[in-house]
Image (cartoon, rainbow, N blue to C red; front, side):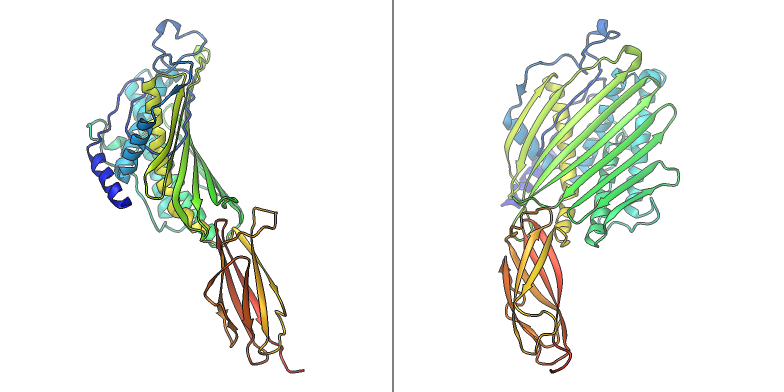
Length: 482
């Protein structure tokens, strides 16, 4: 049924056209999913040209309501459905188009257009180059060529290159202004780091390109993954910086993994400064077998800031909040949305951009998140033997009480779930429950080999909503008869 629902949404999406408004105002785009988004914009064309040189509060496209206004819940649900039905190619193409238009919407109030010669097309072409360079950096990371010391990704999702359905833009604009490339760079980066985590790597590490333009920093422990990346590009008059950050912890006591990420795009030229920041919080549910249930909630926060020091730093604060939950059968529910300090049209434009970006992040992250859960590092296992475990007499019965505990908790409370025992090395011993998943805390009944001088290794694996844990446990019989 879930697959049928998705196919139906895909059919609807094929007729769902994206449209863009190429002007100083934010465009209203198409569709997206689960999140909470905030827009905080500073500086902008308020429509009140008479006040443009004075200090004060202004919006991008006119003053909005100072009161909080609710967004219809059906609009949020419908948008989420349409975004979820978009193919990866269509989603990437839509994000790239919105990305470029957003940067251009900021370029007038920030003064960037003026600082780059007063021609909008010059500013646009500069941002297009930034987008292409960020895309190339993402491709180089995925191929293993960026730092020369990483292996190619096992799964590479290339950015979409399709020109928009409305005919706007061209192939050179297919990668936006850095937002799409930064998002994909972060996806490849996450996959690389989770592979390292799964292979047992710990500690901090830093990589940088030869010119220092791109740097990445990772921090790995048993209970969390932290990663940061910065890419700096210098063009004729424009300096652009794209930063990504992600923190991925082990599941909490409720079986929830909450991932936090940031994507930040900044442009500077002379007295002009503009910044667009996307943050998201993805909360995924884990079951008692350490598997993702398919239920997750995504919240996004999108902020924009401009500052033109030649005009006294006019500022305005705008906010748009959207949250929605995707359930295991792929339907959406629990919608909520509101905006403040902006127009409805601009609020919907920012909401759509945030939801599309959030959907992209969710698709990139969830397949890798299961690999982290299966790595066996979130849970510790202790074994309390009734005898031994070393120098046992042959044919001795031993009860092995196994206690899985979450490493991010100091309560000493069981993780629940199950524990499984299998021989990694067997020289004649036996485990009554071998291969069975026994509810934790679990007792296994072991019988030592019939001969002296034997060594056996039993691998215990614990699985629960706190993740997984693995332990190799050694038992031996006495080297000789007394």
